Image (cartoon, rainbow, N blue to C red; front, side):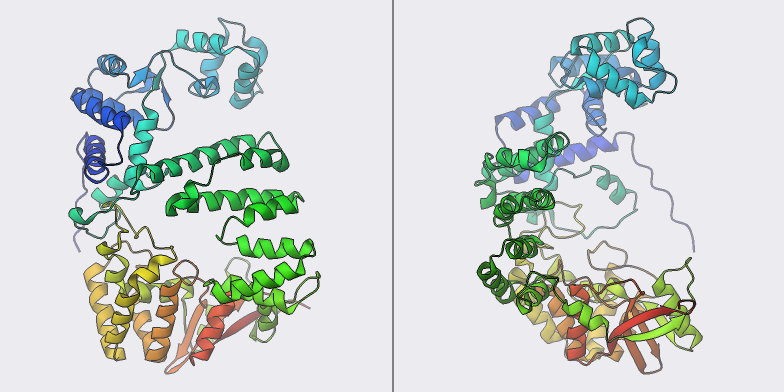
Length: 555
């Protein structure tokens, strides 16, 4: 088989990508952009070609401060002239440096020592001191003015301006603050294949300026929180948190989810520090897992048994999360504050077991596979990728349906609502229609084979492309009933976030004899999600069990 030729990108590939982002944002977010972003885009387009290149080069690097002497790119012939133009257009500054600690980190330890020879920094370092130690000493003992003066005397420094405008534009394109322009490169050089979308059908991540600003606000508070928590105890930050205006962000899906992740994290720190009532008050503003579980635990510690019963019943009746349901059920079955007996612990006790000689170089699942192979069986890892791949191949069109307002740009590996509770609600009729078309195992396998050939190698959040995957999928469908298969994929669809994990580790078979096993070492535990799938598979006549490993060298 001939090797594919290496793809060489043009020297200014990054500028093409950046211009694509600008055009995309102007097309899909025109009603959201305000004067400052519109001015940014206009001024950027008025820059000379090489100045545009230099600004994007800096924007794609880490940090907001740069040493021009280190900005060396073959496609940019005169960096100094470009910097002057960027300065005139207020894209950079020569004297606006708010964080002198970051400035110090632009220089190496030998450079800082060299600078120190001409000023009064010799007292801050010894040969045994690390660069970090030296930097901290200088930062804590010298004025910002002196630091900036001494560093700038050694080498010119510039700072990027218009960072907020740039970050906001990237937020609109990617839908988050961690979007990476390198995804364009990965796509263009062929390291990853993406589903093809109709550019005319892209929908915005944010539908109003208020929604986008709310996301930015929560992100800013979280960044501030991460800084403050290094200096203050959790209880000292509680009043700070309470004074923040989170009512507006909680009106919108994306900012609300960000807020709930942030709040759960802070609430857990309060809980671990013993501030139960304060933690409970924060958990009660979220529904994101594990909020309910933590609320039940705190309420029981506070002897609020009526509230425990009320909340546990609410979880059992309304939650689609198996872990929450099982945990709430266990909590209701134990009315004391003592350690509850978990359903998972009970189930683990009745599993099958085998004895093997322990090999610490191998995973326990690999040792179990070797055991069955020695017994004449075929044995394969299946865990999450088998069932996820079946689901992903069967419902490829439904997952990437562009009418669901979840496809926003061409670099998406998954729809933005992939883990949203509304994923199923929005696609319910389509999923049920597809299930009806699966009238036989033969038709089901034909559909999967066709999609496998058509989409092979394209990124899908559920599909794991590996040699032998299709054969394993077909073998699995051959073993179980069509009704069981439909039940499993439908359960995944109901809760794609939680129900796409926890599947049995192994498929073991010989001829028509088969068994799925959840493998557990002597110190391993069974999760609620694993118990959910064990019970569901058993109720659908799938041969499945826990396989407990016992080491032969144990007493």
